[in-house]
Image (cartoon, rainbow, N blue to C red; front, side, top):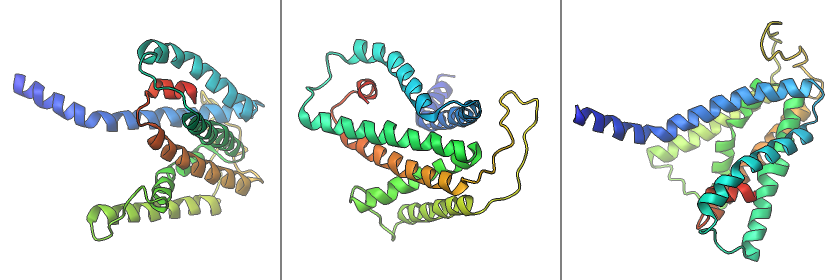
Length: 221
């Protein structure tokens, strides 16, 4: 019995990051529909971003202060500049363009476009020589194939406009039948720009993450 519990514990530790990533995607999918419903009720996307991070900062602040107040490194000028650009790409540019694109497109479109963030991050990391691609290796070929496939899917989602599928009137989060907008291309451009900004945010996080505490880092950003 103990051997089975030990094997289960080892498997849980290995699968925990993947399960958490799936959970995050499920929560984000629900968030897309919630934001779309809010925008349809005349909620300004910039105001939504402000409220979202004000609440998030208040929630994270106690954890950052209690757990990490004695271990946070000295705030130098270099770190301050890094935090500024991290906040710029991660919150100001990314989320404002992201929610603005949601206003002009649809939750399903935005969810598909977000999947290209990993591909764009990979391309930028290769361009900055933070990532090495070995096309002779199976893993390297998989990265290249997945990146190309993801970008092709994003291109099809941007240029192809199919039939409108109307949601049920009795749905808990009913989105009005205005999913096909005149500004679909504008929303697509904003969505792609937000994904590029998001990719830069991930890269900056990997650089700034050295020697910093994550809860405090989230609070500063």
